Length: 135
Image 1 (cartoon, one colour):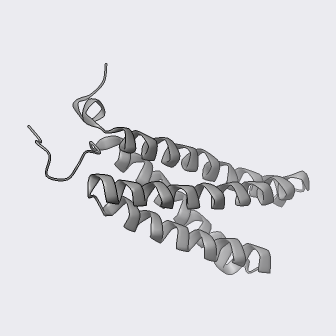
Image 2: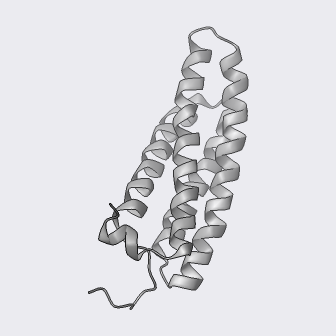
C-alpha cells in the first residue's frame, strides 16, 4: 500500500528518489571495500577505487536531477543538500587519491551519513510542486 506521501509524489520526485537510492547503495559499499583493503585483501582497493568513481558519478547525476526538481517542483532543498554532499565527495575523492587518510576517513563517514539522511528525507516527504494543494 502506498503512503499518502508516495502517492502524491511527481515523476520528477520519483526520479530523485531513484537516484538518491542508487547513491545510498553505492556509498554504502565504500566502507566495506576499504575494510577489505585494510584487512589485507588488496582487491578491496580496486573495488574501493571503482566505487569512488561510481559514487562520484551518481552524485553528479543526483545534482542534475535535483536541479530538475528545483525547476519543475520549485523545491530548492534537494539541490542545496546535494550540492553540499557533492562538494564533500569531491574533497573526499581527492583526499583519497592523495593518501590524506586523516581527512579521507572522517569525511567518508560524514558523506555516508549525509547520503543516508538524504535517502530518508526524500522517501519521507512528498515531492510535489511547491504551493500545490497539500490537503
